[in-house]
Length: 137
Image (cartoon, rainbow, N blue to C red; front, top):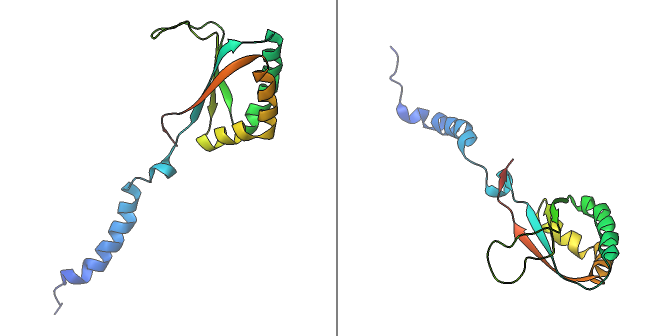
């Protein structure tokens, strides 16, 4: 005669099954499942030197940025003010970095600091780092 199956005896198997099957449905943490790019907005507030200074800086920047995983997303000398006071900035660039840490490493790097001195010799600038929206991996 067979003994009746005790449901309590199946409890450990149910837990193991839940862990194995349920683990696939639990979302990973945000740090694991998403990356958040950082954008650096470079705004020239005033031009104080010849435009060739900015061209020299731009050539250096094109060499430096890829070392930090960055690229230009926009670069313009034709900007339109949609809201606010005063004139539109004459020149704006938007750079994309893979992370805020990459943007900070780029900004603090000796090669960027040397190039920034060239840039700053021909104008006054404001640089702002902005967190991008998360992108699923």
